[in-house]
Image (cartoon, rainbow, N blue to C red; front, side):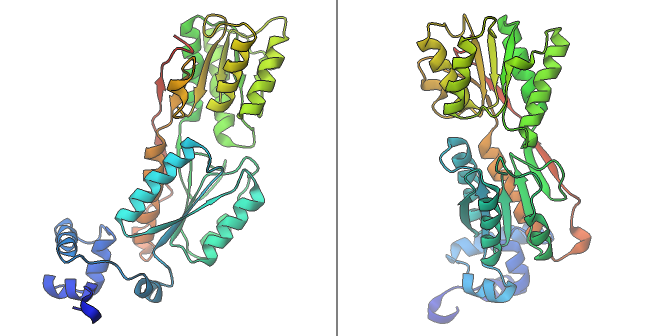
Length: 342
């Protein structure tokens, strides 16, 4: 035993007749260590109530057994779900998590990344703000050998790993679902076209219209419409149109929710007069007066994979030959059908 009876990795190594470095790698899930040894180390660590020493780790590696995650907004169930899964996955590997929000501001996002680098976190996961086009901090992370993973909102061009959904297919599937309902005049609440995810959803929508033989009407595409406020504003504009859409594919749930509420308050019936599909499957969607059909992006899976990707990069950072090429992971989506389209 170590000082004051605390179990150390040296105690584990002695019991297993191996080295402390092997135990350390096994505890981190390093695949260079055999599964048999990893299982033996984990089992013994549990039996002896072993807890990692963050101070020793910091002295040994210059880092603090911590991962950072930066999200555009914390007050969204979607991002809260990602953070929860990310944190749970990291903690299973004895990593703490530092959480930051950009509040959709590129300067705040950059400042958050630099603050995490100053804290010497082992890796950083980030979902871009609506203002971020070319993340300047990617070079800084590379210079410090700090793995960087983008999730959900990812850059158009990057050398880092990305984890996202197939947003083109999301736009295509949502539009086709509206057509199956019988909609022929389908509009789109588009997100900011600075972000790849929203560009791809718009392109998927356009492709579906083309395949259906429906006209693309520029006046039925409303950019930067992803909030409650913009959803209400655009819905009021639609009410004043002589020829209205009879279906709306909204790039986010909040604009869809606000638009539905506005349409209903003005005497339209959802979905008979106008059907609505959103994206993100927010927790309140099933409990609305008219429950919202939405695309489930599986945010728990996004958060879990973001943490696993960082941990994999961290474990292999000291071995150039074992570093895999850039990873682009796509998480499958599902359409959750509810009364806004049924």
